[in-house]
Length: 413
Image (cartoon, rainbow, N blue to C red; front, side):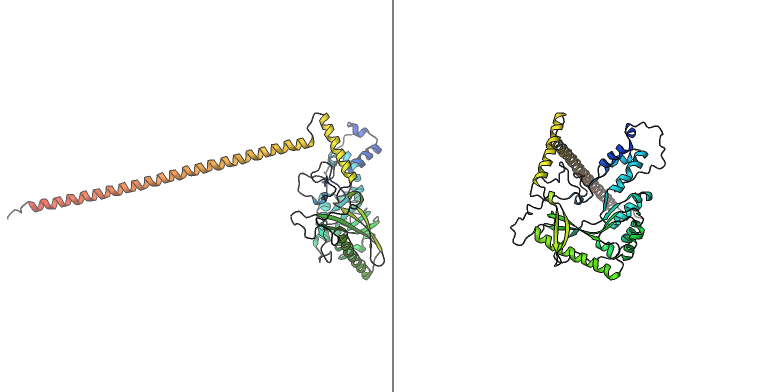
């Protein structure tokens, strides 16, 4: 979520000096709409120049919402948010458009509680019209698609904050967030009078391989949405609806597994040609009552039309840079890579030089210690020899005196 700059204490000059502010407000709103309204977090795609952009009709494209902590990909970020930091007037005009016209997804209840309560000023909560709290970390396995979940403090905090967003229109939640909080669910109609739609959502990952590689698994993701009525008051009916949603997701997961990994399919297996990015919506009929559910696929291979469009964008950008006398993106990336390799080599050389200097210094120090030790041993030996020689000399003198006494006759009395 973008961090809102607090400009409440700044003064606005009454004289309009910026040409942009001389434009009529209606046109400025069109500009704000163009800059700030964009696809939601789940629907964003990689740009033509991104390293993760699919360039083959068979490659699985990792969705931007699953690319984290990688400087090579910034496609998951919202663009042009810097306009909100321009000045207080532009911020006051553009911020309501950004917060009210976009779908804001949060990966967990904890992230929602932290961002909305800390990063977003309380008076801006009224601008939030569309919120989704949906995790993208669920992976479909054989059997049930769900695991046991318990209540958490983050979920309770999430509900407390959510019920203060008075102008909310659409809300997407996971089944665990709703089923364990029926009391808060019953407050939605009164606390959020403008809420028109509550949707239970499950974003599920599916392996393409029967034995996936844990290091780089091939995954596609499917969003399963089901609208939930806002007027379920009976406890039994409420839990029956939640149970039916779980059963529905399990049935859809089995159906999708059979679709993307049909029994007896040759390996390596590729998705059917009909599953491409330009046809990522499917209607699936489930059960004896022929219930129809619309699902959305993410991470599908690019269609021929999409690959052509991306190739045209890359070619146009290459020609533009060439006409301006600038290196193309590939040339710039190559020169940057060469520079990085050169810097890495220089860093390794410096490290090796320091290690060599340390090794030589260590050898010299050991030599000094050895020479000092040898000198100390020699000095100790010399002193010992001197003591022995002195002792022998004393003994020899004493013997000479004794012999001298023996030779001298004693005087008679």
